[in-house]
Image (cartoon, rainbow, N blue to C red; front, side, top):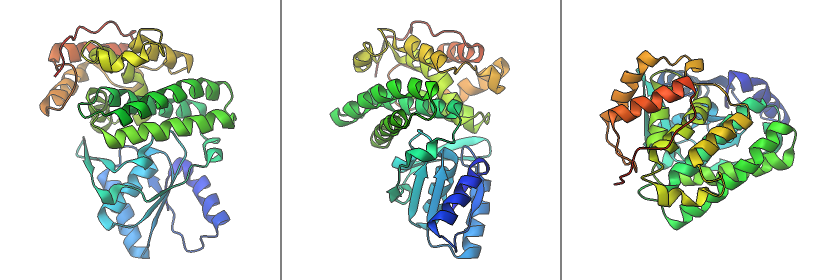
Length: 323
Protein backbone atom coordinates (compact mmCIF):
# COMPACT_ATOMS: atom_id res chain seq x y z
CA UNK A 1 0.00 0.00 0.00
CA UNK A 2 1.34 3.44 -0.87
CA UNK A 3 0.63 6.74 0.85
CA UNK A 4 2.36 9.98 1.73
CA UNK A 5 3.86 10.49 5.17
CA UNK A 6 0.91 12.76 6.04
CA UNK A 7 -1.58 9.99 5.22
CA UNK A 8 0.33 7.15 6.92
CA UNK A 9 -2.03 6.96 9.91
CA UNK A 10 -5.07 6.80 7.63
CA UNK A 11 -3.39 4.08 5.59
CA UNK A 12 -2.57 2.01 8.68
CA UNK A 13 -6.16 2.37 9.89
CA UNK A 14 -7.40 1.15 6.52
CA UNK A 15 -5.06 -1.85 6.63
CA UNK A 16 -6.24 -2.77 10.15
CA UNK A 17 -9.96 -2.34 9.45
CA UNK A 18 -9.77 -4.20 6.14
CA UNK A 19 -7.90 -7.08 7.76
CA UNK A 20 -5.01 -6.86 5.29
CA UNK A 21 -2.57 -8.73 7.51
CA UNK A 22 -0.02 -9.25 4.74
CA UNK A 23 -0.08 -5.69 3.44
CA UNK A 24 3.16 -3.73 3.20
CA UNK A 25 2.85 0.03 3.75
CA UNK A 26 5.21 2.35 1.89
CA UNK A 27 4.34 5.84 3.16
CA UNK A 28 7.02 7.78 1.29
CA UNK A 29 5.08 9.13 -1.70
CA UNK A 30 6.08 12.65 -2.71
CA UNK A 31 4.58 15.29 -4.96
CA UNK A 32 5.56 15.29 -8.64
CA UNK A 33 6.43 11.54 -8.40
CA UNK A 34 10.26 11.71 -8.32
CA UNK A 35 11.81 8.72 -10.08
CA UNK A 36 14.17 8.15 -7.14
CA UNK A 37 11.15 7.65 -4.85
CA UNK A 38 9.61 5.19 -7.30
CA UNK A 39 12.92 3.30 -7.45
CA UNK A 40 12.89 2.82 -3.67
CA UNK A 41 9.24 1.75 -3.61
CA UNK A 42 9.82 -0.67 -6.50
CA UNK A 43 12.71 -2.29 -4.64
CA UNK A 44 10.50 -2.77 -1.57
CA UNK A 45 7.68 -4.16 -3.70
CA UNK A 46 10.03 -6.75 -5.22
CA UNK A 47 11.49 -7.63 -1.82
CA UNK A 48 8.08 -8.48 -0.42
CA UNK A 49 6.64 -10.07 -3.56
CA UNK A 50 3.55 -7.84 -3.60
CA UNK A 51 0.76 -8.87 -5.97
CA UNK A 52 -1.24 -5.65 -6.10
CA UNK A 53 -1.18 -1.93 -5.36
CA UNK A 54 -3.46 0.07 -3.06
CA UNK A 55 -3.09 3.85 -2.87
CA UNK A 56 -4.78 6.11 -0.37
CA UNK A 57 -4.35 9.87 -0.56
CA UNK A 58 -3.99 12.57 -3.19
CA UNK A 59 -1.85 13.04 -6.25
CA UNK A 60 1.40 12.01 -4.57
CA UNK A 61 0.17 8.56 -3.51
CA UNK A 62 -1.79 7.98 -6.71
CA UNK A 63 1.18 9.07 -8.82
CA UNK A 64 3.47 6.60 -7.05
CA UNK A 65 0.97 3.79 -7.51
CA UNK A 66 0.64 4.57 -11.21
CA UNK A 67 4.42 4.74 -11.62
CA UNK A 68 4.77 1.31 -10.00
CA UNK A 69 1.96 -0.11 -12.13
CA UNK A 70 3.68 1.21 -15.27
CA UNK A 71 6.75 -0.81 -14.30
CA UNK A 72 5.05 -3.98 -13.03
CA UNK A 73 1.55 -4.05 -14.59
CA UNK A 74 0.16 -4.86 -11.13
CA UNK A 75 -3.55 -4.04 -10.57
CA UNK A 76 -4.37 -0.85 -8.68
CA UNK A 77 -7.06 -0.01 -6.13
CA UNK A 78 -7.24 3.75 -5.50
CA UNK A 79 -8.94 5.55 -2.60
CA UNK A 80 -8.66 9.29 -3.35
CA UNK A 81 -8.77 11.84 -0.54
CA UNK A 82 -8.50 14.99 -2.70
CA UNK A 83 -10.18 16.34 -5.82
CA UNK A 84 -7.25 16.43 -8.25
CA UNK A 85 -8.60 13.46 -10.23
CA UNK A 86 -5.42 11.58 -11.13
CA UNK A 87 -7.18 8.31 -10.31
CA UNK A 88 -9.29 8.52 -13.48
CA UNK A 89 -6.53 8.91 -16.08
CA UNK A 90 -3.88 6.87 -17.86
CA UNK A 91 -1.48 9.81 -17.49
CA UNK A 92 1.67 9.69 -15.37
CA UNK A 93 3.82 12.73 -14.61
CA UNK A 94 7.29 11.92 -13.24
CA UNK A 95 10.14 14.17 -12.17
CA UNK A 96 13.77 13.37 -12.90
CA UNK A 97 16.81 15.67 -13.04
CA UNK A 98 14.67 18.75 -12.38
CA UNK A 99 12.23 18.14 -15.23
CA UNK A 100 8.70 16.79 -15.14
CA UNK A 101 7.68 14.55 -18.04
CA UNK A 102 4.33 12.97 -18.76
CA UNK A 103 3.39 9.78 -20.57
CA UNK A 104 0.30 7.68 -21.17
CA UNK A 105 -0.21 3.92 -21.15
CA UNK A 106 -3.04 1.47 -20.45
CA UNK A 107 -0.91 -0.01 -17.67
CA UNK A 108 -1.00 3.35 -15.87
CA UNK A 109 -4.82 3.49 -15.70
CA UNK A 110 -6.07 2.29 -12.27
CA UNK A 111 -8.47 -0.66 -12.47
CA UNK A 112 -10.61 0.22 -9.42
CA UNK A 113 -11.42 3.53 -7.73
CA UNK A 114 -13.44 3.85 -4.52
CA UNK A 115 -14.74 7.29 -3.56
CA UNK A 116 -15.33 7.38 0.21
CA UNK A 117 -16.37 10.92 1.14
CA UNK A 118 -15.46 10.42 4.79
CA UNK A 119 -11.81 9.95 3.79
CA UNK A 120 -11.74 13.62 2.78
CA UNK A 121 -12.83 14.89 6.19
CA UNK A 122 -9.35 14.74 7.70
CA UNK A 123 -7.93 16.82 4.88
CA UNK A 124 -7.35 20.46 5.83
CA UNK A 125 -9.79 22.84 4.13
CA UNK A 126 -6.90 24.68 2.47
CA UNK A 127 -5.77 21.51 0.70
CA UNK A 128 -9.34 20.51 -0.18
CA UNK A 129 -10.14 23.77 -1.96
CA UNK A 130 -6.80 23.98 -3.76
CA UNK A 131 -7.21 20.47 -5.12
CA UNK A 132 -10.71 21.48 -6.23
CA UNK A 133 -9.32 24.41 -8.21
CA UNK A 134 -6.85 21.95 -9.74
CA UNK A 135 -9.86 19.93 -10.96
CA UNK A 136 -11.47 23.07 -12.39
CA UNK A 137 -8.23 23.63 -14.34
CA UNK A 138 -8.64 20.24 -16.05
CA UNK A 139 -12.20 21.09 -17.03
CA UNK A 140 -11.49 24.63 -18.24
CA UNK A 141 -8.53 23.65 -20.41
CA UNK A 142 -10.61 20.83 -21.84
CA UNK A 143 -13.07 23.37 -23.22
CA UNK A 144 -10.53 24.85 -25.64
CA UNK A 145 -8.49 21.70 -26.32
CA UNK A 146 -7.75 21.16 -30.01
CA UNK A 147 -9.33 17.69 -29.69
CA UNK A 148 -12.32 18.72 -27.56
CA UNK A 149 -15.61 17.01 -28.37
CA UNK A 150 -19.25 17.44 -27.29
CA UNK A 151 -18.94 14.83 -24.53
CA UNK A 152 -15.80 16.34 -22.99
CA UNK A 153 -17.39 19.80 -23.16
CA UNK A 154 -20.57 18.73 -21.36
CA UNK A 155 -18.51 16.93 -18.71
CA UNK A 156 -16.23 19.92 -18.25
CA UNK A 157 -19.02 22.47 -17.88
CA UNK A 158 -20.85 20.31 -15.34
CA UNK A 159 -17.62 19.73 -13.41
CA UNK A 160 -16.97 23.47 -13.16
CA UNK A 161 -20.55 24.15 -12.06
CA UNK A 162 -20.40 21.47 -9.34
CA UNK A 163 -17.01 22.54 -8.00
CA UNK A 164 -17.77 26.26 -8.02
CA UNK A 165 -20.75 25.52 -5.77
CA UNK A 166 -19.15 22.85 -3.60
CA UNK A 167 -15.81 24.47 -2.75
CA UNK A 168 -17.24 27.55 -0.95
CA UNK A 169 -19.55 25.22 1.00
CA UNK A 170 -16.58 23.10 2.08
CA UNK A 171 -14.67 26.25 3.06
CA UNK A 172 -17.65 27.29 5.17
CA UNK A 173 -18.12 23.85 6.80
CA UNK A 174 -15.38 21.26 6.39
CA UNK A 175 -17.79 18.52 7.58
CA UNK A 176 -20.40 19.20 4.88
CA UNK A 177 -20.67 15.69 3.39
CA UNK A 178 -23.12 16.81 0.72
CA UNK A 179 -20.70 19.44 -0.57
CA UNK A 180 -17.82 16.98 -0.45
CA UNK A 181 -19.87 14.44 -2.42
CA UNK A 182 -20.62 17.14 -4.97
CA UNK A 183 -16.91 18.01 -5.17
CA UNK A 184 -16.00 14.36 -5.72
CA UNK A 185 -18.48 14.13 -8.58
CA UNK A 186 -17.11 17.35 -10.08
CA UNK A 187 -13.53 16.15 -9.78
CA UNK A 188 -14.46 12.79 -11.31
CA UNK A 189 -15.98 14.53 -14.35
CA UNK A 190 -13.03 16.93 -14.65
CA UNK A 191 -10.60 14.01 -14.51
CA UNK A 192 -12.57 12.34 -17.27
CA UNK A 193 -11.95 15.44 -19.39
CA UNK A 194 -8.25 15.33 -18.50
CA UNK A 195 -8.07 11.72 -19.65
CA UNK A 196 -10.05 12.34 -22.85
CA UNK A 197 -8.51 15.45 -24.43
CA UNK A 198 -5.23 17.36 -24.56
CA UNK A 199 -4.21 20.01 -22.07
CA UNK A 200 -2.53 23.29 -23.03
CA UNK A 201 -0.67 26.27 -21.57
CA UNK A 202 -1.92 26.01 -18.00
CA UNK A 203 -0.80 22.43 -17.45
CA UNK A 204 2.49 23.00 -19.27
CA UNK A 205 3.40 25.91 -17.01
CA UNK A 206 2.33 24.06 -13.86
CA UNK A 207 4.54 21.12 -14.82
CA UNK A 208 7.48 23.48 -15.22
CA UNK A 209 6.86 25.16 -11.88
CA UNK A 210 6.43 21.83 -10.13
CA UNK A 211 9.08 19.73 -11.81
CA UNK A 212 11.84 22.32 -12.13
CA UNK A 213 11.18 24.65 -9.19
CA UNK A 214 9.60 22.02 -6.89
CA UNK A 215 6.56 24.14 -6.11
CA UNK A 216 3.51 22.41 -4.57
CA UNK A 217 1.19 20.97 -7.20
CA UNK A 218 -2.30 22.06 -6.09
CA UNK A 219 -1.19 25.50 -4.92
CA UNK A 220 0.50 26.19 -8.27
CA UNK A 221 -2.62 25.17 -10.20
CA UNK A 222 -4.84 27.45 -8.14
CA UNK A 223 -2.46 30.42 -8.41
CA UNK A 224 -1.81 30.06 -12.13
CA UNK A 225 -5.29 29.33 -13.46
CA UNK A 226 -6.64 32.93 -13.59
CA UNK A 227 -3.52 34.09 -15.46
CA UNK A 228 -3.40 31.27 -17.99
CA UNK A 229 -7.10 31.73 -18.75
CA UNK A 230 -6.55 35.47 -19.20
CA UNK A 231 -3.72 34.65 -21.62
CA UNK A 232 -6.02 32.44 -23.72
CA UNK A 233 -9.30 34.29 -23.24
CA UNK A 234 -9.39 36.13 -26.58
CA UNK A 235 -8.15 33.24 -28.69
CA UNK A 236 -10.51 30.78 -26.98
CA UNK A 237 -13.46 33.18 -26.65
CA UNK A 238 -16.02 30.90 -28.29
CA UNK A 239 -15.01 27.83 -26.31
CA UNK A 240 -15.03 29.73 -23.01
CA UNK A 241 -18.28 31.62 -23.71
CA UNK A 242 -20.46 29.18 -21.70
CA UNK A 243 -18.50 30.16 -18.57
CA UNK A 244 -19.30 33.88 -18.84
CA UNK A 245 -22.55 33.45 -16.93
CA UNK A 246 -20.81 31.29 -14.32
CA UNK A 247 -18.14 33.93 -13.66
CA UNK A 248 -20.13 37.12 -14.27
CA UNK A 249 -18.64 37.83 -17.68
CA UNK A 250 -14.93 37.96 -16.78
CA UNK A 251 -13.77 34.37 -16.42
CA UNK A 252 -10.17 35.05 -15.43
CA UNK A 253 -11.13 37.66 -12.84
CA UNK A 254 -13.93 35.38 -11.65
CA UNK A 255 -11.45 32.59 -11.00
CA UNK A 256 -9.13 35.03 -9.23
CA UNK A 257 -12.01 36.20 -7.02
CA UNK A 258 -13.07 32.60 -6.36
CA UNK A 259 -9.56 31.92 -5.08
CA UNK A 260 -9.76 34.91 -2.76
CA UNK A 261 -13.17 33.83 -1.47
CA UNK A 262 -11.63 30.46 -0.62
CA UNK A 263 -8.70 32.21 1.12
CA UNK A 264 -6.29 31.10 -1.57
CA UNK A 265 -4.24 34.25 -1.29
CA UNK A 266 -0.67 33.11 -1.89
CA UNK A 267 1.45 34.14 -4.86
CA UNK A 268 4.26 32.36 -6.63
CA UNK A 269 6.61 34.52 -4.56
CA UNK A 270 5.08 33.03 -1.42
CA UNK A 271 6.06 29.62 -2.79
CA UNK A 272 9.66 30.87 -3.28
CA UNK A 273 9.44 31.55 -7.01
CA UNK A 274 11.55 34.65 -7.75
CA UNK A 275 11.39 37.13 -10.60
CA UNK A 276 14.94 36.12 -11.55
CA UNK A 277 13.60 32.61 -12.22
CA UNK A 278 11.07 33.82 -14.78
CA UNK A 279 13.36 33.79 -17.80
CA UNK A 280 14.24 30.13 -17.21
CA UNK A 281 10.54 29.24 -16.92
CA UNK A 282 9.76 31.13 -20.14
CA UNK A 283 12.56 29.35 -22.02
CA UNK A 284 11.23 25.99 -20.89
CA UNK A 285 7.67 26.91 -21.87
CA UNK A 286 8.84 27.79 -25.39
CA UNK A 287 11.21 24.84 -25.77
CA UNK A 288 8.70 22.16 -26.75
CA UNK A 289 5.88 23.30 -29.04
CA UNK A 290 2.39 22.15 -28.09
CA UNK A 291 -1.18 23.04 -28.96
CA UNK A 292 -2.56 26.18 -27.31
CA UNK A 293 -5.29 28.60 -28.47
CA UNK A 294 -3.07 31.69 -28.21
CA UNK A 295 0.39 31.91 -29.70
CA UNK A 296 3.17 31.54 -27.14
CA UNK A 297 5.26 34.70 -26.96
CA UNK A 298 8.19 35.29 -24.63
CA UNK A 299 7.21 38.82 -23.59
CA UNK A 300 3.59 37.84 -22.87
CA UNK A 301 4.70 34.80 -20.87
CA UNK A 302 7.08 36.96 -18.82
CA UNK A 303 4.19 39.26 -18.01
CA UNK A 304 2.03 36.29 -17.02
CA UNK A 305 4.67 34.90 -14.68
CA UNK A 306 5.43 38.31 -13.19
CA UNK A 307 1.76 38.87 -12.36
CA UNK A 308 1.57 35.44 -10.73
CA UNK A 309 4.74 36.08 -8.72
CA UNK A 310 3.33 39.36 -7.42
CA UNK A 311 -0.31 38.28 -7.11
CA UNK A 312 -1.73 41.01 -9.35
CA UNK A 313 -5.33 40.62 -10.57
CA UNK A 314 -5.39 39.27 -14.15
CA UNK A 315 -6.05 41.81 -16.85
CA UNK A 316 -7.60 41.41 -20.32
CA UNK A 317 -5.65 39.18 -22.67
CA UNK A 318 -3.80 40.79 -25.57
CA UNK A 319 -3.97 37.53 -27.50
CA UNK A 320 -6.37 37.54 -30.39
CA UNK A 321 -5.38 34.70 -32.71
CA UNK A 322 -6.00 31.00 -32.45
CA UNK A 323 -4.56 28.03 -34.22
